[in-house]
Image (cartoon, rainbow, N blue to C red; front, side, top):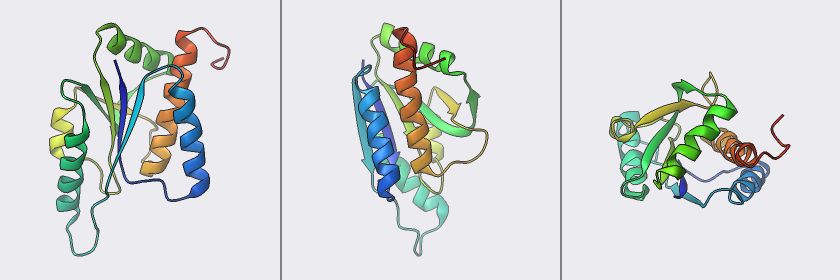
Length: 154
């Protein structure tokens, strides 16, 4: 079982990039973690729907075949950290890769949403995709500590 984070774009702010890297490194101690970044669609002269479709195609090309696809969306299911850790353990127990998909500034394409078996909420409001990636990485790390009974999650 691998955990894949498939995200549009690279973090632009170096401080935020460092925080993302820190939590992805921590999470990788608990889960085999692959991070896939796809190029953002140009916003110039392109309609938002077209940009979303192009980014969606790039994301789906990079999701492993047979993986359980979970999209990160403000309208998704709200999970506690303990429930999130159970979600990861369930995928591990079924020996299935799980791919968490984070859209870009225009959101997720209908094709990506259709491929997803579930949508989860990282916050009740819309997050910039860089912040969503940081929150997801921290929760993956926290899930690992919950599973091992370590004191990080109180």
